[in-house]
Image 1 (cartoon, rainbow, N blue to C red):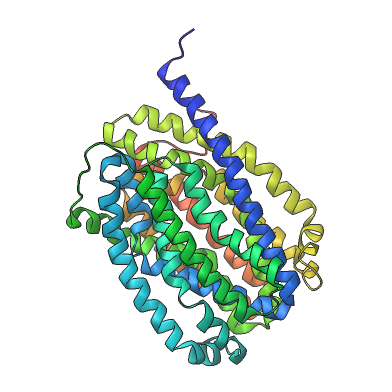
Image 2: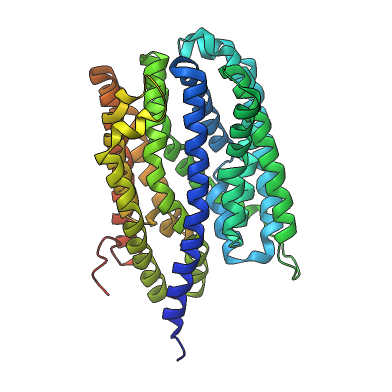
Length: 425
């Protein structure tokens, strides 16, 4: 019996998402193991310094990519033959910007550690990890281009497994026990991941005649998304920045571990996004809005089914999960519960951010992240000053939930359907 195009597409998305889920789960496990090893081998204080420096690099790398993350996925997904043109142009912009930012971070490591974080011991860690700004920026763009080509497994390997695998191997083989050495190892691992991403992209680029994208089209798309990426990073990571200013390294480490554990729930959303984002771009380009709506709602159901058990484990057994990271971390179980609630909202709202960006509504997503990012900074700062670590976690969870619920509203307004109304046909 021949399947209808929609049923065939349905099965294709489920099959591809299942494969992506398994590989993304491996990436999440690699990240979890790396975090656990770092926490256990370095202890709460040294791991606190490392996680804070790592968060700094992640945010600066995101800023350096100049909004190219989702622009690369959108243009490569809609026209695979221009993959290398899109990547080379995005690499030129992000590579130059990240190099300047990395050099500045290295040069200013001591004043940043002493005057911003008020932790002079962090200076060497920041110096060691500074060059990773370039590697993180470039391996993320390579993974985005592979995602646009629907090479989901390779994309996940580059962005989630390569660097974490090197970290895990290095800790086990060389008994690394200080944050400075680990920072240097991560900087080298990020460079290896970037190189491997480029090689994989070259090998898997379409064989048909390549086409070029204009700088004008690229810049027009990425500029609104630059704000989206910056403010999105603020939503996810500003809590740790603020904690770094107000709290001792041991508490910073608890928050970092709790947030990384809570974000394991979002790997389901990320796995599905890897599959559906390029399809959203292609469907919108072809004007097939009925199929777009069907795919969006079907993906929400899929995410809900897979994410709910993960969240439930975090809410029911937080002490056990945090205890896996060693002494001094079990006290962060309530932090994990709070942050898990925010990630649950992130999961059940579906791929709303990608829906807006892949369908040409980058400015709406920019406005959403301006609101949620500003809320993350102001609310988390106030709650941290007033209530300490618990206030920090609550502020982060509220900001994450607000960003996604606002995106649900704009999807309804722009595309005409509500991703939460999964019972409607």
